[in-house]
Length: 159
Image (cartoon, rainbow, N blue to C red; front, top):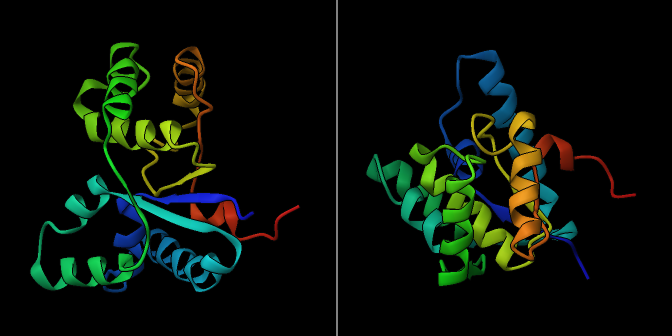
C-alpha cells in the first residue's frame, strides 16, 4: 500500500505557475515539478473540496491549469469531524485564527488518516515552531497528525 499524500493548494499553484524570476520560488517550482513527475508511482495522491475551491479562484487561465492538474485525484470531503478538529487547532492556538483554512487542511488529513500533507506554506503549516502544538491537538482528539512537509522532503527514495 502506498503512503497517502494530501496535495494542498500551494503545491498545485507552484506546479502550474509561470516560471518565477525569484530564485527561491523558482527552485520551489522546480522541486514541485520534479516531485510531481513520479509522485503517483510512489504515493496515493489526495486533495479535498477545500483545495478545489481554493484552486478555482483567481485568474481564469491559472485556475483552469490548477484544476486540470488536480483532475483524477480523489477528493476528501470537509466533514463535521474535520471541522471540529480544525476548530480545536484554532482554539488551542496551534494555528492562528486568521488561518482557518490551514487548520481545515490539517483536520481533513488527520481525520482521514493521511500520511503526508504536502505544502509550500511555511507560515502556518510546515512551520517547525507550530508542529508540536499541531501534533498535540491532533493526538489529544484521537487522530494521528499528518507529516507536514514540502515536496523536497519527499523527493528522496523511501526507506
